[in-house]
Length: 115
Image (tube, rainbow, N blue to C red; front, side):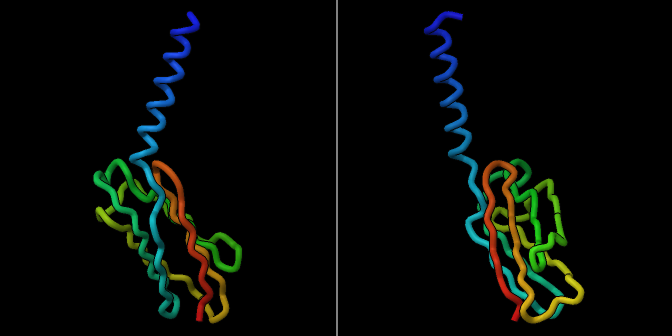
């Protein structure tokens, strides 16, 4: 491969990955509330094509132990993904962590202490 052709190839690869990253983004915000043993989670993630760009994984840890690993194949709303989890035995002082991961790029984490 000639030197100029190689440089062109590298340039094209860089342009492709830069353009793809411009359309991918992590969740912008996570909100969660606890009601007894129910944890309501709203993950803000604005997308144009819910079948192609979505929150594909939500991991919940309780007191630093992973208890939920939920996978999705699409987002049900253009602006957000809503999840409800039942966590038996949840009590005041427990530390919950919710991590939401985009199928294209990035993740966001929320930590909260149960009141």
